[in-house]
Length: 187
Image (cartoon, rainbow, N blue to C red):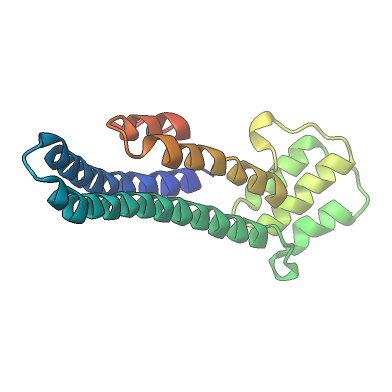
């Protein structure tokens, strides 16, 4: 999940600069309009359309950033769901026999299987399922999260992304608000 937050943060941080550039251009045109130096015909025929175009570009850039962030969330969810599918080719024969032989295993036995299966999601799932079915309490740092749980966590990023794009991306405090909303501490 941390890599997803980092990815979303990177996408939105990159967008801040693009949006800031476009927002600055809008401010320059607004300054020309407010200066009173230009006649009303020029203001209405040239400056107002230019300002409207630039405002659309700001809105489009912000929308594109939100779409990219949501696409990153979708892609991450898809990859996590794929990891949650049991794969018979990944079954470690010896550990599988231990889990299915009928001999009651202790929490330490299950932890040993988990340690041996550190990079094997299928065996991890089987070991966690065994612990759950047999009422074994494992340490808090050894809790299994399913793809559904991870997907819900990822979905919870969508609201802060939307709020950031809608309310903060065009402000001077965009970078600090992005860090705050996503819980990122940048040096």
